Length: 320
View 1 (cartoon, rainbow, N blue to C red):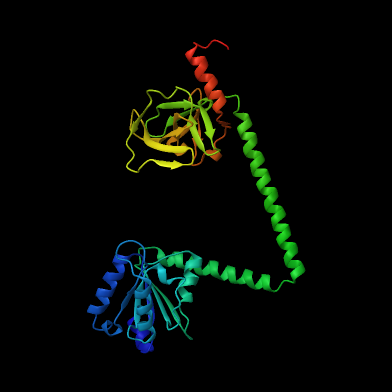
View 2: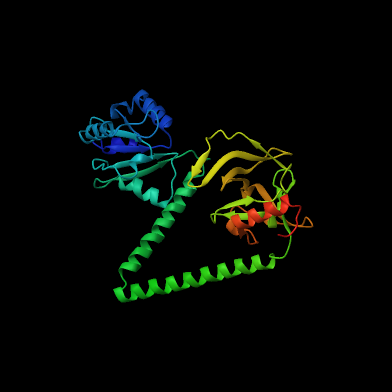
């Protein structure tokens, strides 16, 4: 930084860092440095949360920067995009890494002619290697952009149509494979066991899908296997759905999901990533982060079926 300003003393720059607290620390360090304190650094942060800057404060700071009363701005990512900073010809990033787009946006703050761009990072951080990968990706992107610009409009549209057809075919094949795997398990008993302690929670036949999104246990199978604990967040209502207490494993206390009130009924709603999916005899199938990935189908919840079940239960299972 010292060398960059010595090379061109009238330079103005931005120093990117990751957190608001680090902007304060870097500003204080620069002000204490005899070689850099003449830069009179200012701080630019976002407006969210406590201690954020108002829009008028941001504008005042940028005006002082344009007038070179501040020759350096210490900023968080708020300065990467959306704020016009034309006086800048030096960009520094201090232990600050983002993706290729963020890198281009940060360098885009460097509006003046013959601007320069630096990464300042500790040798053991690995950021240098990541930055090198971003440079390679940026080069590939530029090559691809030039190739696209060189295409005739007809050729360009034909390539787009070809890629769309290929992508559509691949998505269909993936969906077909997923449905075939689910069909393989449609008549097989599958159990969900606690990821932490292995306690059996329920079977696939106990689960129903509410509003095509929430997977609820509608049978009494889980009774005694879970307990309800207060949710630090207030209960949340979305139309006719009300989300209540947390549901946790009775054995180890791992969080399984939450209680749901729907149509006057209360159901435990499960988060699939809290479980291991097993065959009925205990052989594991796998762990899944989303319900859409599980290798079995879940029936939609029907209030009529639930009412019929309650009637049968109260009448001792006799047919009506």
